[in-house]
Length: 161
Image (cartoon, rainbow, N blue to C red):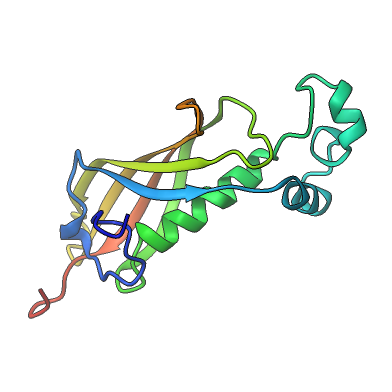
């Protein structure tokens, strides 16, 4: 996967590298049942996430990941492969976070990001506003989560290619 443009975690990127309409594969992540239980006990202690016996008889027929853990798994890839330490300034927020299908232990989740808008800031021309749609898709090709994000990305300084 190292031949994909946004998979190198050491790649320096600036606003000009985020091309509207491009779609990038950010790799595959997963979580074991033990990892799901540990996360849920600390951050989302609902029985569907923390109690295998109860979850087996619950609405999903077994343990499922917290949606927040799915966000965390996605975010790790997003930071490592999409944002750049050289230019990522901040994010004013997200829209339309949707957990569409439960994530099960050891599901293989492939992360894709589509750049839906890239425009230079009118008030601060040294940066741009990049809007992205992130899709998390399991090993069966089913979209389990979507999220629309906004990032402020520094423009390439003069003299840097």
